Length: 462
Image (tube, rainbow, N blue to C red):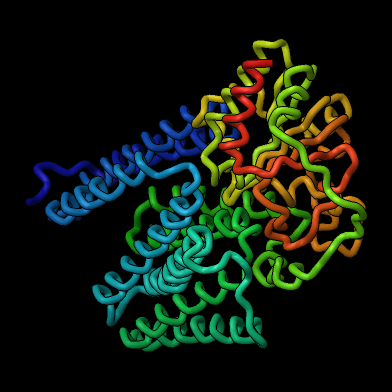
């Protein structure tokens, strides 16, 4: 099936400009939970415009493959998007990054076969760039998904001489790409693809689960750069613009996530954070104080201001609706309720915002770390729900700690702290948390969902 009509290149490029404007405005609106839904729709609209006008180009001469691809993507994508759990959202984002990289690798392979021998130098360079970035993004994303899904351990997987091996594999992949460009050999192209796949696996294996927000953002940047190189291969301005925006935003987000942990992106990639830290301890003395749901319910019901701190444990328990229900009950009693959001809580950027948005938590109750920290001294009770490293005072007070210098939520400055955890197991940093031994802290050992359900019933009866 061929196109019934074709628009001029100038008309299509004008549509691409409109799509780019929608992309930029949409990304700007994604910066706030209040406007994120509209921003997402605008960005999706921009992509629809870009794809729709691309299909009117004269060199699109067979639509059967396009229809087949749209059908397959719809069959796989719609159910995945609708039924994925909030706890699995980081895994889905990782897989989507990987698919972007895989697409870049497929385009590079097909175009290399089509234009060689005698390929233009710019097309050849762009194709080899995709052959390097695409497989690395794909395999790295699959490993990230495996860690998040607990198919393999979330701890760093390291071996002696790993950094040297990683460097050699990357250098070999780059050398093979240069050789493939010089000789226009398909065999060397396949070797480049294999080397890039191996590099992606080796790059992500030594990265711990706590660093996944940075890794996902970085892989997102790689997928965007893969889109840019694919755009140069296909001479498509929409891909170049979209890929540049994704690459730039992913890079910026990686840097910001690293700053939120007081770590650089290279230290995330090459530091094996969490590997040696598992043996680290704090100087905390004494035993923890345990409590019951009954006592916590009384504390909450007669407080003036309560702050909930969501963490990955809340996501795992799928208790976001329960914390909203408890907050509503407290508000009915005149309690000022807020949520403290740490930028790297969870397993992807904005994970807690997405989780609480699903429960329709009012946007004005979500307070970022910089905004809420000065208010903790006026808070009566802080309830920590499955968070650990992001509330660990060792980041402020223990220079030898692996997380020293990392900005944290200053929950220990509130009048009282309730920590809801299933056990005393450490967070991904692998270290003890002196907050648990603080005299003002009590531990409620329970699954977050069960604990919140109990508290809802008890507050109702209070």
